[in-house]
Amino acid sequence: MATSSLPKVKPYSQGQAKIRNSEPMKEGKWIGLEKIDWTDEDGKERVWEMAVRKTTSEGGIDAVAIAALLKHPSKPVSLPIILQYRPPIRNICVELPAGLIDKGESPEKSAIRELYEETGYGGKEFEGRIKVLEVGSTIVSDPGMSKANMSLVTLQVELREGEEEPTPHLDEGEHIDVRVVPVAELYSHLQAFEELGYTVDARLHHYAAGIEAAKKLFAQGSEKLELVQPALPSRWCPTHREEEKVDPLVHRRAAQVWRLCRYSTSNDIQWLQTRTRAQLSRESGRRASSSFVPHPPLLTRFSSSLGSATPSHTLSASLSPFFFSRSLEKGGLLGSSLIPNSFTPKVTIHATYPSSGNVVIGSTYAIDQTQDEPTVSFNAPPGKESKFTVVLADPDAPSREDPKWAPFRHWVLADVVPGKAAGTTVATYMGPAPPQGTGSHRYVFLLYAQPWDHTPTLPNDSDDRPSFDVGKFAKDNELDLIGATFFYAEKK
View 1 (cartoon, rainbow, N blue to C red):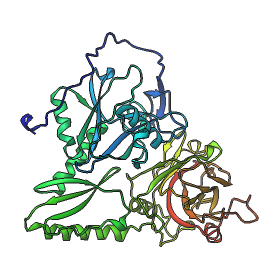
View 2 (view 1 turned 90 degrees about the vertical axis):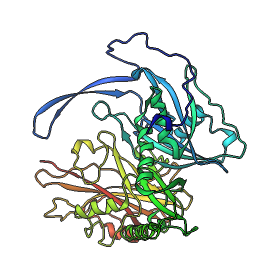
View 3 (view 1 turned 90 degrees about the horizontal axis):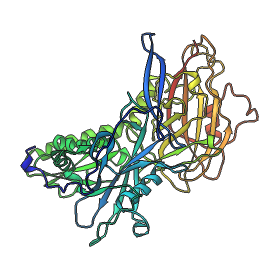
View 4 (view 1 turned 45 degrees about the vertical axis):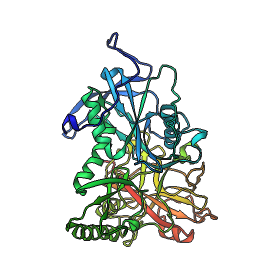
């Protein structure tokens, strides 16, 4: 893009910060160094050096970045971004509002607090006008140097006509410029800041680049971005608004769902509408939506290792239910003793172990990395009528060739209520312990919707973990299987 066509942006106004000195440091207050001894894929012993953050939240997420979508009655949807001097890069950085998660905070509470502190959007003046749309999966920015991570929290802020921009509530020594940018012009604004010599944070750049790519790939002529709430596949269908000139398309990138409205009078509209409807129809046919989810799904993150489940609403859209269905099929779990052939995931479920991080579906993990009770997260709606049960079972006990003890029950947690401290341990967690030489075992997390007024119970032989009839357990307790994921573990 030519410089002359870029929008005019105001330079950073917080003075002239500068570096006085830089020298090696053995030990820091916030960051430490670790040496990792590891064995690579070829069996060679190697050493790796990494930086570690000394502060982390109980849920395993270090920090949040906030995409606060400002909805104005008469103006385009906008996004507050911030400018601040960052000593490590010796430059002014253009970023999304962000911050570390405090002890006991959920990601969305941290996001709402940080947004208020860094931009002023929040507090009593905005009570009832800020809504959590989603919290994406835990991401890392530089996995070769550090395991520091964060989640992108998407908020929606309802503005009023004539309302002035709020004042940030910064900590002492914190210097931040807030800029409100129309979402549809975000990418060009970042280019304009780069022309001033500023550095753009990777998360913000990727966010803007995804929107820009969507505009180029799916829109012709003039285009605008119209925010829509994330919806389940059954609702992914074009609306019929002024069909002679409007063609809504659904575009999904990471945790964002947008409707791209293309304004044109060209003859290709009918072709594009037909193509889009066919594409969405195929998507809907492959994936089923949950009948009990009446609004955008929220991810519930809980950890029963704290004594009770401590959920927080977040949203995970990086992996679709269709992806999970294909992975379960590839792992031979559809039609197994745990999951019927007819099963289609309605939500996505993720597990995180303290020593190994997020479980990637279908991946192999060391036995000693899975002995501590995990944190489980899933996208489901909050509400007093929503309760869930999680089961972890092994369909390969004692081996996949001779599963005479299968399914082996490793964990049952019931009465999980999104947004509240809840969770009843029906069967305590037992880490994977496959017998030596029995090959790779599949460890499957099953997520069920349960009746609100009934806590699932085990049969009389509740201490007998082998030969756990999962289907009968679900039927007896009126449980509806809505999600599943799994990993492999083996003792060689």
